[in-house]
Amino acid sequence: MKEELLFFREARAAGERLKLPEDMRLCRGAGVRWCERLVSKGLPVMRCVRYLLRQRGRNEKADSTILEDYWRVAAGEGVDLRDPYNCYPPDLMKAHDRVMAVRKAREAAEAAEKLAAENEKLRAGFAKQLEQLAAYAWSADGMLIRPAEQPEELTREGDALHHCVGTYRNKHAEGRSAIFFIRREDKPEEPWYTLVLNTKELIVIQNRGKGNSARTESVRKFEEKWLEHIREIRETKKKGKSAA
Image (cartoon, rainbow, N blue to C red; front, side, top):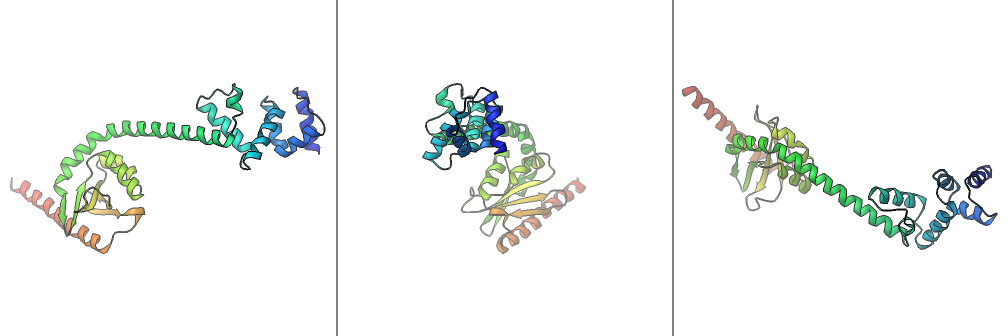
């Protein structure tokens, strides 16, 4: 009762002409603390309360949190809330979902634009890596392995296999590690396993499949054969340089 009395006094001081007991009963149904926030924000308390209770009658999920969330997101997306139709939409839940979808689409577009800009900066590094790693592409036992060619490939690989290789774009471009894709020979474009190589020591840092799953025994054996192959390539190059 003390909380309600304080709210009543604050509302009256703000110019709200609350009727007793009917308006206080409605405010109690909407939540007295929420009504206090409406007063502090200079919003028309009873209009908001009656609107919210009507919407709750349409959908029990329509509460003060949903309404305030709608107002906040709608304002952020440029919706003119001075228009009563926008401020008190006929269907709050649909309006809430609509502005959330708009925000999600905008954020996705912004993220894609940012990623594209970052990838452009990394492209030269990827090209340099490809020039050095192309000789390590190999196939055997129905499998193949090749180095990543473009930064976008790492994002697609991570999305397809649900792991974090997309965050390795900078490391690959800077030569701090090297990303290779292991594929089935009959499905060369389908993500399968992603291998991270320490190029200085020619050792595998990790080799993961979908959902960060460990490699199968057949993939492990393929990996071992491939490591022997690329170590032979390096030794051959060393001998060639020594002879020269």
